[in-house]
Amino acid sequence: MELPGLKHLDPEVEQPVEEPPFSLSRFGGELFLALVWGHWWNAAVPRDPIFGIDISFLRLLAPVFVAAAVHTVGNIGNQQGSFMKPLISSYLLYTLNGFHDRAITSAALSATIGFNWRAKEWRRVKEPKGSLRKRLLKTAVVVVFSYGLVVSFLYFNCEVRDNSGVSTKCRDALQNFLNSPAWVDMKTQLLRIYEVIKLHGWSRVYEEIINSIDPLGEKKALEILELSQGASQENITAQYRSLSRKYHPDRYKDPEEKIKAQEKFIEIQQAYERLSDIKTKRKRANKKPSDQGTTNEFSQGPDDVNNDDDEDFIHDRDL
Image 1 (cartoon, rainbow, N blue to C red):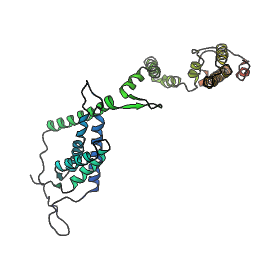
Image 2: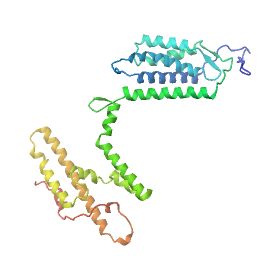
Image 3: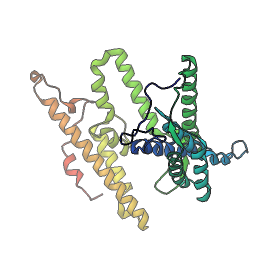
Image 4: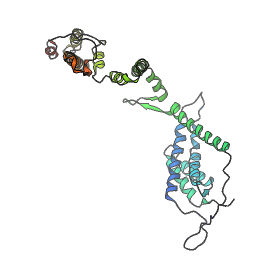
């Protein structure tokens, strides 16, 4: 079936144009998709042997995906072109550049130029659309294959690197994260919020979230002082004195240990000051007349025991 009104005349000479003119947008689309598909395939092929079988040689198929990307974009609309020219151009530059990852860029550029250089033509006949089932099947195959490449990359090749430069597979890092205290604490908080929703509805979710994120830093300070929630001021002061004596820098002779003790000592002191400040503000809030009808964020928590000497003890260094 001929495309209706498809004459492609040159407006100056009124003669049919045998080759479509150069389009920068189409050229850019071909190059971009070629780079994406080429690097995508290269990243998905496992680098390490699987069950003792090395399949890293499949990375040599990267130029095929580069040429397929160029061919896909180049055949959109009323233009069409062959698959062999971009494939040959892609493999030519890929081979000359040594089959490594950086060669994909030159292969993509070569394939795009090869397709646009006397390899494209006008589409003279409109191709049949095909049945809906066939089109859905093609779409499903493409989607499954694409997600398969993503899963392959994440499972086999994805790595994370810490500050010391040690690399770990993403699958191992995820497993370690699921076993980490941070995830356990997050999961516990989410379960608590879920229980609050079941018991009280959504009205108290905001309050529970605020308590969970610890905006005052109370939970962290209690953790540093090795205390549990609800500790009295006497317990906080006694624990502070005990830990301050234990980690006082003057007790350590080794320079490295002295530096670590100094950091720990400052951390303990800051935690004590924070807890004392929180309890002081809560005490003041609890003394306010109840007829004000306001709720203070520092008034929530266990009953506090007053200690008038706490403020003077914060700066005491005579341990």
